[in-house]
Image (cartoon, rainbow, N blue to C red):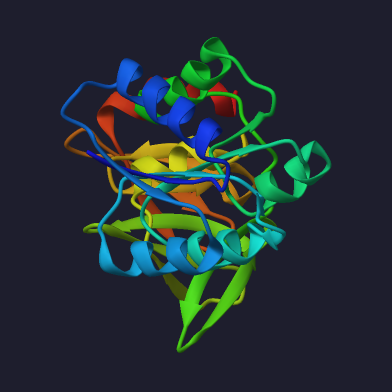
Length: 231
């Protein structure tokens, strides 16, 4: 596992590094950066799994990095004293916001959200960011009908009928999405507001009929949970 820490205060950076090694293991690879420029350069040249980001980097705004990395496949945890920016950070899809000053227990709580396969209560995600040529486009969560797995990527199927490709996997997105989204199949996450009715077909196959007429497969292991929710 490769973890990037972007923090301009050396003392705090080393403290975060020590706690990170204590939580994971001694073999985790940790990269340290102290500026927006160095951080962005490291992200472009390394395949990382988790970013720990401060929002005030020698007077530079860490949001300059955040807006560039929310399209990436890795998860981001903010560690910052700027708690007034927490809501905005969650809107843009960070996994957690750890306010400074912090202790080991609070940082470990954030790490547990990262390592847990289960969806946990988190922030108020409002946008998913996708790359469009050399720019970043924000997709409003309320416009997404369903999300389909496409290898290491995902397809965002939006209300006007077009599809946007996102770098995060279904598993990563599932941890960020609000309760209105539910995993109905190994390859699909559905916005519950788009569900019309559950269809049972011969051979023990299940589908979800959407309000727009599309049919999505429902996994057998998900059927009982989905049927109960529709009652």
